[in-house]
Amino acid sequence: MRNDLSPVAVVDIGSNSVRLVVYEGAARAPTPVFNEKVLCGLGRSLATTGRLAPEAIKRATRALRRFRSLIDQLNVEHVEVIATAAAREASNGAAFIAEAERILRYHVTVLSGTAEAELAALGVISGIYAADGFAGDLGGGSLELVDVRGGTLSNAATLPLGGLWLIDASGVSLKKAREIVDAELAKIDWLDKGRGRDFYVIGGTWRALARLHMTQMNYPLSVMHNYRINADEALKFASLLDHQSQSSMAGIRDISSARRETIPYGALVLERLIKQMKPRAIVVSVLGIREGLLYSLLDDEEKAKDPLLEACEEIARRKSRSVINAWELCAWTDELFRAPGPVETPEQKRLRHAACLLSDIGWRAHPDYRGIQSLNLVAHGDFVGIDHPGRAFLALTVYYRNEGVVKDELGQKLIELVDKDALRRARILGAAFRAAHSLSAAMPGVLPNTPLSYETNRLIWTVPEPYSSLEGERVERRFKELTGLLDREGEIRVGPALQLAAG
Image (cartoon, rainbow, N blue to C red; front, side, top):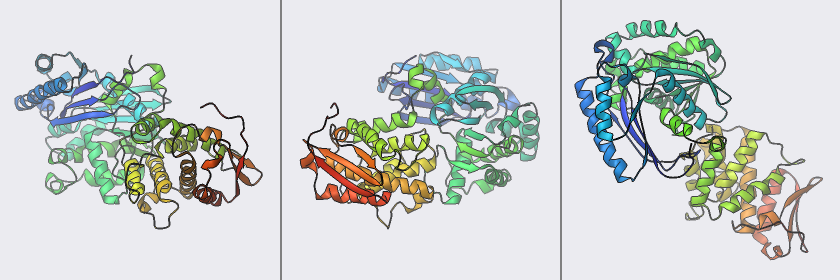
């Protein structure tokens, strides 16, 4: 078990791609510092020959030699190497693994189907807050399915339904592939437990499919993680794609040529799963086996942390003037949302605290661009543990914090992702941040000693000595904006010294 910030590298030898990801450290919200894949197609001819093709082995070993040099270049001492279905099933897989170990000078763990499914599910748990549904990891050689509920796993299975495997086994016939898929899924007697729950899809082919759907919908975000498609819509879209020929797929520019050949087969698997499982929605997880492996290395205390708040704190530490002030802002706004103020759910409180941590990340930008730069940083940021409406809420909040409550929002497209209540909360929080930062200058020690409180329908901001000289016209104006959004009277109560909070 570990939770330090020394670099960790994961080499993933898959049936379609061979990848190296180097993470900044083993943490609840790990940050990749290097990520490279090579599509080698190790599992391309496995179904018909039972062997890894020589050309695929040649490409893979070349990639592994580069990865070994990159690991040395990046001074990584902790390296995990895993191999999945193709290396596990091929008759010459053991010889290939021996060569991989010689090149990398590290032990290669060849995962069983069950272990592969469990690590994929742990990836979902690590990156999707309160995940409840089935995780499905579609690789080049196999499909792993596992039930995820309340942080625990059950009903794991692995099936030979990877994209390359299906292409090979079916003789490039989608009709034959459909028969293969139905026969394999018929062996699983617990798929109905996914009814009405989410289906978390993992793997490059399914991400490519979701990317096509995003483009078709003119979706306002480009972030793939936690992209959600209603099950009925996903079924229609998958049914359309699984009837496409290779020639028709060739014209799609959003997807690499190496992925285009597997998309109809991935769509076919998804279509048949939706029909049998009947989930409520398809949710994309960009975190899978590699991130699940990293998560498994953490101690229990680290696993219990909130990945969103951990990521936001790290961003605040790097980009804001004071992370201590950001946490003080969380407590200061707690009082704003106590009765008789706006009522919030535990999830809304969690998002508010995340917004507080991100509230000052744009301070270095030119004043004319702080709003839009902060919005883009949050809307397209590389962090997890949040869905897309929540991400849009955070982005709008930091936008309003910098721009005020404007009418001609540059973030208009993001508004489409949030409901009216969330939009109102984003405006209120943005105004609260503007008022708080105008008094504290985003420095620690002020907000704990200048609390908010309600007196019937009035919001009171107490500014005692020695902070009373910080009160001024800008503070009054911004506090008035806040109370106006709350539809309340406001008073800044400047008075003698009170018993101050510890600094």
